Image 1 (cartoon, rainbow, N blue to C red):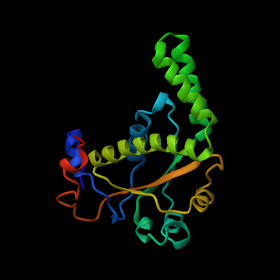
Image 2: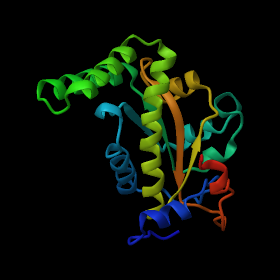
Image 3: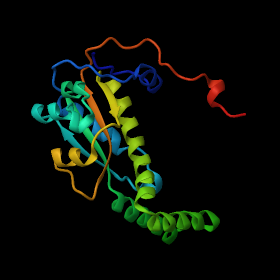
Image 4: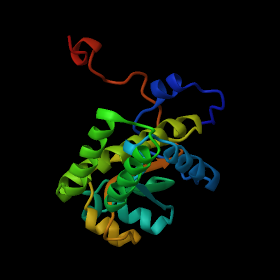
Length: 210
């Protein structure tokens, strides 16, 4: 697929689909950098930016991603030009949320009841259990992955978000710090399959509440 230099956001949304078959062509370092930059610019709650990324392009390691103990034999992962392991820095999420709240209050950027609500939110997050903190930070990581997906369409690349994997074995395989949590695997490469013509999606009437 050729790069779509003048592709609009709506076109990228319409053209994006999950790709599970890739050509042998490598994903360039420039394209990888463009994807990470798109993720970096994504919004996050209280500007916490809890996303952390591990880019994997080594063919032997990519092959391991497709094996049973890592991904329940999703063998197509070995064909990807790269797998970006998307992680959440939970302690960083809490710390940076607290820093943002302090900055807003000290500089009177947000005041009154709204600021009180932010302080209550940050306090609740800082004292929440690990599962709740992971859910909140993972939501932000998911937003950054969506930005990468749309940028990939513009670059002529195909992607697939993968949520079935053994987290501990993934972390051991690519050397990810034990303090980080893996949110998902982002497979990317040059698509070898014919794009679907239409997405199978619910009708507006099914998702829009009265």
